[in-house]
Image (cartoon, rainbow, N blue to C red; front, top):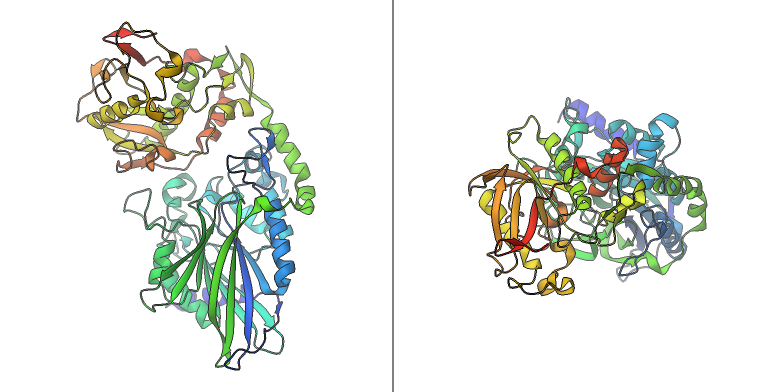
Length: 590
């Protein structure tokens, strides 16, 4: 190890010196030593949700499970737990994806960017008020560029961690690798809690434009193997990892980068870790134990869902042994934030920024030349869905320019998410655009062959009931065959084809062509697709194993908004392309 690296580690340890926290010992244990209980709380994937508000619906947030969202709700839970356990017995961390995801984040990154105004980012303001002890970088922290990220980090009172994000030039950590927090125990040696922050290697792909040549993102396991001994060597009694990486050991990209969802791999392969607080996957994981393959010890993992809907609460019992502290027990749970009211302190802090954002989403972003409705989108090729296709196609086409796939035709898929979506003739607002694309999907580009595209369309066409030639068309019975929801009926742009609903499922696609020529089985295409579908949602063939050529994790809904804002006009003459239709024995249904 070089002397320079040693100096970096030492500096990190000094900078990580904790504020004093007071923990009182519990009664003497059966062995005669003291035991102490401490609690660690963790949020993750807040994604700009400061308050319990849905900016796209202009109303309080609600979903089918009646979850609530936001840091104001998290704050109330944190206050309750601090009061219950004693503030000196608790620590609070976050596992990343904080400054992107809602119009609130977008507003202070793009409309009134904090890099220009000098104002404190709303998420920094809220997290500082709540009193986080450390925050780990998520991949979405890089979406708005390194200058904005650097500004947010400076505004945060809590250290912002990312041990495996290193300078592309020097290989040294670009962000603080770890922090050590010290809890004072009355009459005893203090307890030191070390926290290592790990972020996602996929940033190198997803935000290539922001990080290429500047940052590299190393393997999570290898990075943990490097730093955990350092943290232990500095006297940490408890070692935690806050990782912005899921726990299934898989990646949404190929093998050129380290594993994306490596949290469980870290727990299995790196000795010396007591718990991994993870995020990125947006799952509610109250408690999971993984056996470390080196020591045989049980490592606890927990993930608190997304958007502030849950808070992970981890309880540790430590016993005094041989002059130090040893973890003798650990358990965790996730607490639902819909069980509490918003913290009025956070609500008051956010009011000005929230009100500005509400005003923004109700702003007119473009003028539509005519009214565009999604009512007929489930059974007709409509201009309003073609608008989605146009935006997706343009984004992926620009992204692959200059790559080995630049010469391939770019197609796009979109589904009729909402039959009630309308762009009114005249002013179109941010909320109108959000009403068309109601899900929080991100955009990818995958490579498919002509044969695979034919299979894909045949699978999608099972959405329609079989109707004989000449039989009356009942619109109420035509779609959603077999219980297939609207969001699982994909329409493809960029090629032309017919769907013969008089034929059985699997034999319906005819006339599949590209620029007037029949699509051949071995012809290659790039297809713009959303992350839900690419990850297996709906069970469509081929896409989960298809090569991914683009995955910048751009939110499709936000991309639609930005596209409309940039152009100022929504004119179907520039994007409407009736490239598919329903037929029966060659005769159009409509």
